[in-house]
Image 1: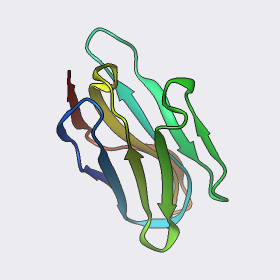
Image 2: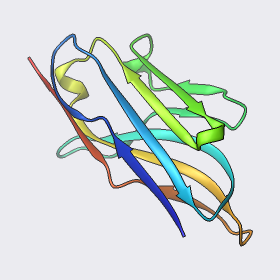
Image 3: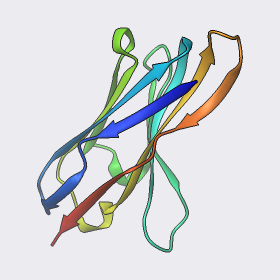
Image 4: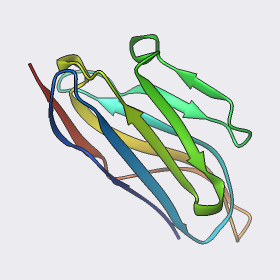
Amino acid sequence: QVQLVESGGGLVEAGGSLRLSCVASGSISRVNHMGWYRQAPGKQRELVASTSSGSITNYVDSVKGRFTISRDNAKNTVYLQMNSLKPEDTAVYYCNAGILTLQLSFGAYWGQGTQVTVSS
């Protein structure tokens, strides 16, 4: 059994910063890609940033230069540093990871989500 647990969301004023964390735990053999998605009310879930097992990163254009994704492979943890936040960044942020379990089953796992609210 694998779990992803996010933390670090909250309420912040426009221009402020937040740091999200996501820890993968359980029956893990290897963590492949890790990433952050977000879903705003009435909108589809979108990929915000991702990082491969070799730390190659990818960002949606709207967050380039403001958000930074990083990972600590020893801790099976991925972070999302969010700076210069804007009201349009308001959403529920979800962690996603591709994980090979000790039972040699590979799958995509999701966290429960953490709310980020940016006030204007």
